[in-house]
Image (cartoon, rainbow, N blue to C red; front, side, top):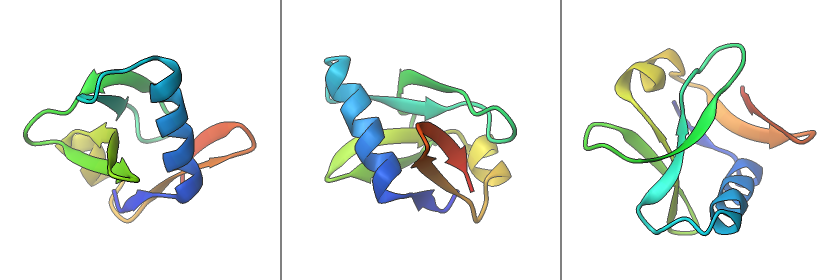
Length: 83
């Protein structure tokens, strides 16, 4: 996975804030193709992590990162999309 857009970072950060998530909690992208699944989780040592304004907002495991190579997580029209 290449990264996240500013819009995706803002939305992920807002979701974590609304959930009163602790600093070590972020959102995990579970399914990279088709219907994206996001869930609250913590990053594991081998995960690829993404930050928005210095806050950890997204983590993906090696398999998902590989499946999304060269792609970016975006947020448009009230939904997350891997583009």
